[in-house]
Image 1: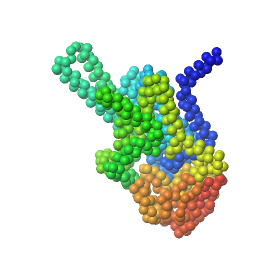
Image 2: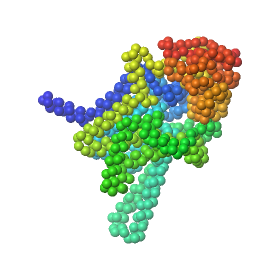
Image 3: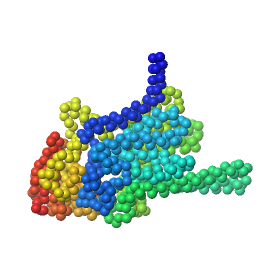
Length: 621
């Protein structure tokens, strides 16, 4: 009896082993982040210095749903330039505290990625699904666990969901009509500038291809009829049915294109309003993109194929790329030996690799100035728009390619099945343990383990220390802060924005060119001293910061402030002209009086992680 029970358990484990990582990893992730709370270590770049502060600012000013209002940073910019309220990710920040919303976003991205990967896999596999179910869930978990650009994690994770909806519509099943509302609502978890515009473009090309195929088949049918090659009514009937099916598919997909476009316009109406109906000149007009030589472009294409980019880090170089590369050689070698050229060009795996290469090529060609200028002349609203973001689809394509390989292995003997299981487990471990920019789980576990075993904290600031809410509440109360315009020196302005302090400085990739020029007057002394900083601001300008006049960067997300000079190089009169009142600095300034500043006081966080020196403008006294 005991032996029989053990055999049942073994069979159950063999069949459902994947449930342990599929359920365990999200639970472990939630346990870590909610156990440490705001003492967790969260990625700063394009995250805590950008979107988290913006969401908190929208909450502080109760501006999520408001229209015709400005938000208090970069001297006051339109609410329409910040994320739409019709986004599932934005809704999290409306409902929950910012840190909680961020963690729920991570967990939601994992679950959404796994679920949306499962949907098209199950749809396309049909009867084979039950056999390969373990790798369906495990590959989906790998994809969902990727540490994408956090603010758009849902957009990355939901790409397979869009594929699934479009497959259902294309196949024209009985309930296909009900998938149109789902497609209209899809932009709630997507983002137009990163994915939507490309999805619409690919879908339009697919509609054109279907229409071309329809015309070709009808032409062939007429030709055969004229030549008398159609022998009977049954053959003619099949041709007519195929033609009708093609025509219906064209109409269904054309309607899908229109519905999806309408969904993006509805969900991101603020963005479309700024793009199409605003005559304000933005910094997009002055952004200078690199222009590379052909050799440099080829090198960039090879690099992005091998390693991807940090906003869409697919962590594929260590496991996925070698497995797919080996399979590509073996699979196509077999086709070549058998001279099955048509099968080679129709193989789904090969098509995925071609798609990946195409996206990498577009990424490289973006840095070819004549092509970029041509796109901007043909479509003026897209001036400054990065059409090289096609590469953002590659993480999904890489794991879809890996899944195709694993399915092939599952068709072999038991040793191939276990090999496939081993590969997907290794791929998951690689995703979890690679310390890339946005792997908050790894950095939190590592830094807290370091603290435990070494008895001291790392120099990096935790979420709680970075925003220092208690410290800034103390400062605001002590100085009697009443919403005056301010700026940060030696740390990100996002810290002030998060804490309800209006800033003249800030970080945004889309704001007024006029304001960029006005703010430049404040920082002109620093830009004149450091040529690289001047080029950085003039050619880009998204980070309107107070720069150092000696160091390339003194903006720090660490407890230690790395600055070689305690002087600030700024135009105090220009600061006052923009109604600047307070300067919050992590550096004790030795020349405050020279630039028209008076010191108010020094404030230090209770745990000693941050000290802030507060100055105010004497010219306004």
